[in-house]
Length: 218
Image 1 (tube, rainbow, N blue to C red):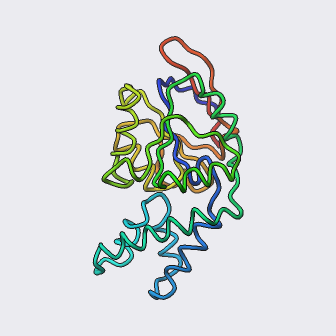
Image 2 (cartoon, rainbow, N blue to C red; image 1 turned 90 degrees about the horizontal axis):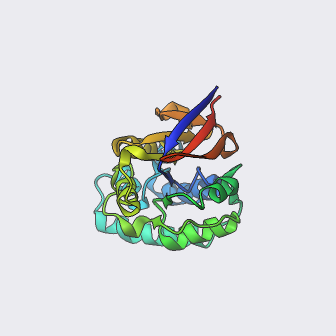
């Protein structure tokens, strides 16, 4: 089924949406979790889409959050230095190229260093407007990041389309009042407005008052 959506801006998550970093994310987080005796399935359910310190707070609710902040910084440094297996999601660069003449931004829970390392490893160009971990006070599923990107672009949230893969990210986009396109095999289960297998299923064309996205849903 093909759906046509009118947009004035596109907001893109990174991990799982533009780059496939699943292998390194899961490897490093399971290494972190092992000394705490945490169930691996629980860990992998929590960590995707959130800033690390928030994931730690969910998994270790009784722990002093100051420790989470310290360990989160350590985790970011490890992730930045480990890009083995990081590759582009299908259609990612084609979509980024098509958006060059239109308002768009990357909205990620990664910090600038990690975002740059993973986008470079995947061979992807980085949008000029970047809302990263340093830019917000609240992590996804809070809508702050998406609302900030819309504000910086000068676009009404209702006219923005979000591309996301994780449950936390999809919830954040919906909470911001935006249309959300879920990316990847698991995304449809998190309740996005629409869902695609990857970004090869998205085509952008010019349109009066903005631009249109044609998406082919499974």
